[in-house]
Image (cartoon, rainbow, N blue to C red; front, side, top):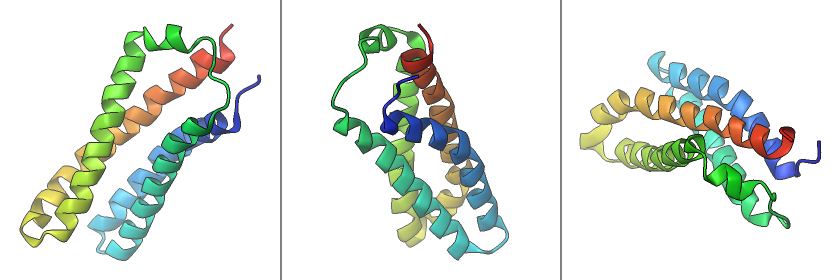
Length: 132
């Protein structure tokens, strides 16, 4: 397997990320909001690092056009965009006092979409670097 480090980082994050995200999500319910906030910020930093690291790739995979034609890539892309919008909403709603109740109600849904984006991203790695 000859995958670039960015792809390996992304697939490791896709495997570990959902566990960390849901652990952070459960910390908010137990009243430990500082731990919740710290873990979520770490998750956001990892997500953005994975996203922006692909812009540093020197060589694109020759199979990329084939992957982009598949429906699962389009689903992954839609989930990834929804995740970024959801993260922006969560950050915004956390700091606007009137929206805090919506922050608590929408947080689990953002986490589910985020995990779905991570899980569908694993297929991208498998298609580009493991399938011949």
